[in-house]
Image 1 (tube, helix red, strand yellow):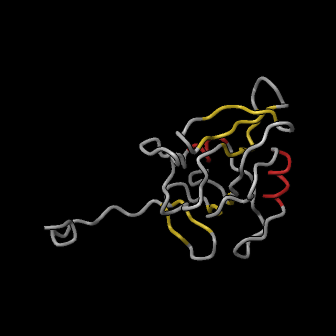
Image 2 (cartoon, one colour):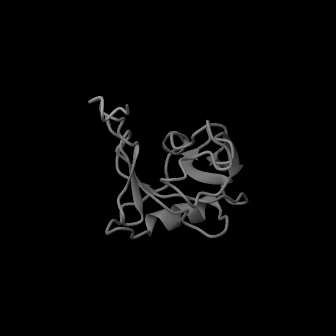
Length: 141
């Protein structure tokens, strides 16, 4: 007998596909671009401009995610890609930019890998990675 037949509520899905190229994280309240925002890797400043100029699903307040926001999407029970592929089907098993500048150098920013779900730093101008846009304020802030 399944959970519904027993009268037990099934767990709510964490990600809700809005059907307009966006996905809402029901845990954080953030809205994400469903697709990777670039075909090729770009530097962090280009990623910042791309997100700031994005008009997606009738919203223009897109931005780069912080390292904590993007790292929260990583699913370390999966690899290549380390993310929910039903919610984010075209995610590359590669590095993605965040807006978080490293504490030791304003020339570097944090990046998150969706190969294995780890994080590292990369030079903002000479380093290249992919980008996923986010909008909204996390729940509880």
